Length: 282
Ligand SMILES: C[S@@+](CC[C@H](N)C(=O)[O-])C[C@H]1O[C@@H](n2cnc3c(N)ncnc32)[C@H](O)[C@@H]1O
Image (cartoon, rainbow, N blue to C red; front, side, top):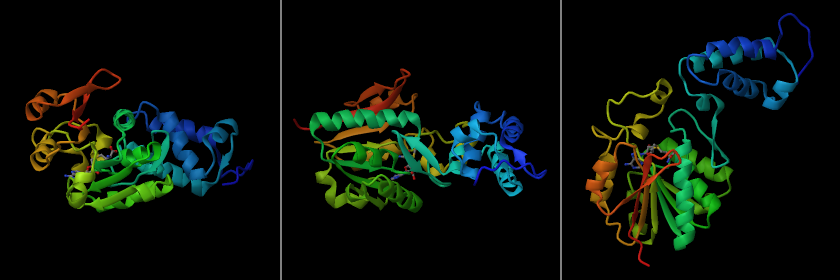
């Protein structure tokens, strides 16, 4: 939109509008003003810095559009589905309804993975449950590896490809629809490292309202949240490989029993959030 200094009665100044709409979001987020600013920036096609510095007039149709989206957000609908993107590892990932929104703690998994890739000269990485491609695309972007990604969701296959294209790693990011590593069975022996941020929430766990808009197959891991891990370690012999997975902070004891050789690593807030199994041959 062209930012116009127009005094027509049907047009409102953006600052007044943002102030009014921020109140609507007070019960759903800790940053209502910022969220309204981000939504307004998308609706008006104006950079947020410009929205802050220039008190522009908003045409009535854009105001309607902005109000509708803020009302949608007020129901708990995730901000990043409205914006159509989420920043992860300094990269902008396209996201939409049906796709898990990448979380900051998973950036720590990627950073750990990048260190290990360097240390052991890893060449082929698998990313199970790639979703938006957050893990696999970032790893392909920041390390010279080939990524074999899978997801049970067709939409995740499409969206992760789109993100791989966006970040120019499509030739090293192969994604197929299917469970676990089944789509790459014939390449299993080539895989050096297996990464995953699987569904690990206990069935029936109380979750924040906006999380419930995300796909349930991305979140829930059965009664104890451990279905994915149990099935993965039952199916695959990971001898010679490195496995790094995100876990729920209350799952360490159960996972120690399931995978006694694994190490458990803490995140930056001091919580055990990662399982590392290094069966790599030196
Ligand atoms: C928590 S999300 C993680 C998405 C992405 N890796 C991230 O960290 O943002 C889990 C993803 O795993 C997929 N998924 C669930 N079970 C799976 C399985 N058995 N095999 C492959 N993908 C699976 C879901 O569709 C979802 O996209």
